Image (cartoon, rainbow over all chains, first blue to last red; front, side, top):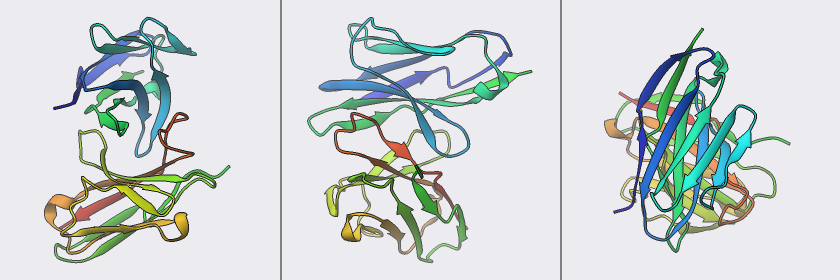
Length: 111
Length: 115
């Protein structure tokens, strides 16, 4: 059975800290891995990763994929209170390009 | 450009009552998705439409859930009758095409509480 596991489930840090969120997966016919940020209701897209070892970067956020070890990390440097959210990882897989979602990591940034 | 619109934002009903959710996708997006998200979990796909055709409804509980996308634009998801376990956030998303190489855009969701 396809699965996506995120860790930690929750994380509390202080403003300015650097955090690393993890996403591991076991799927058939991997297509891509996506990271989303969910504040309140709607997930918003952060990154799509398809190739190993190529870092995607957007401001203080960056992500990289390891297709050999089947995981991805999302890094946030110099965290701000506005980074507080649930970060979701999803893997696109299979012949029907199904999205398999992780349970998310709840990140709380304390001022 | 307007995003995905959903209504209502919140709905509280008693069990066994019917309920309906409405979604208006981003203009020009052919693919529409309905997801259910339980607390502390990721979204779970219920149904995917390509224009007006439901191409993946394998996870839709068909005994009580139904959906339609008339004219390939707006969509409605219905539950009848609702059960306590249906309490969740129902998310609608749309994408230009499928596979969503430019990813899916989510609406704000409808939080359903069944009492």
